[in-house]
Length: 154
Image 1 (cartoon, helix red, strand yellow):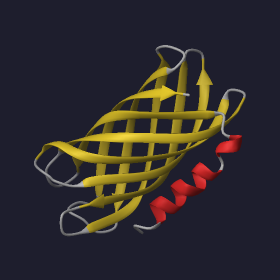
Image 2 (image 1 turned 180 degrees about the horizontal axis):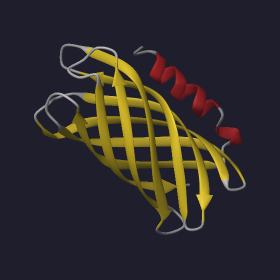
Image 3 (image 1 turned 180 degrees about the vertical axis):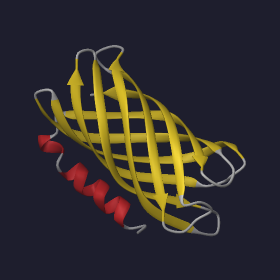
Image 4 (image 1 turned 120 degrees about the vertical axis):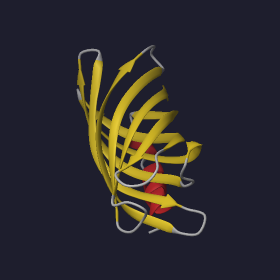
């Protein structure tokens, strides 16, 4: 599954000519496995999307590394998000594939999540989100991630 994440990200970048929603940013994520030790991760996020009125479809890729906690693994996700602009807020939901990179192993699976974001300025957005990863073989079958992100909109 390792080559799949760069391939999906490259395909998303190839559609940049029609993208209307582009952002990059960073987040602090708290990973809570349903068995095992928790950890805090810092992630880098990049996306391209297409707006259609209040609705949008977005391809998002991210990579995260441990900054605190008892586990030591990096994460990578590629997701497709649907969004709806509702007043000052944008609601997002979606899913995709997940990989966890341990020092001696790699584990993959899928994810789904939902969240809300609010524009602070024309170019700066704050997002809160819950993401659930379902892994095929790892220290746990499921990990719940709580995310607080700051995104820069182009």
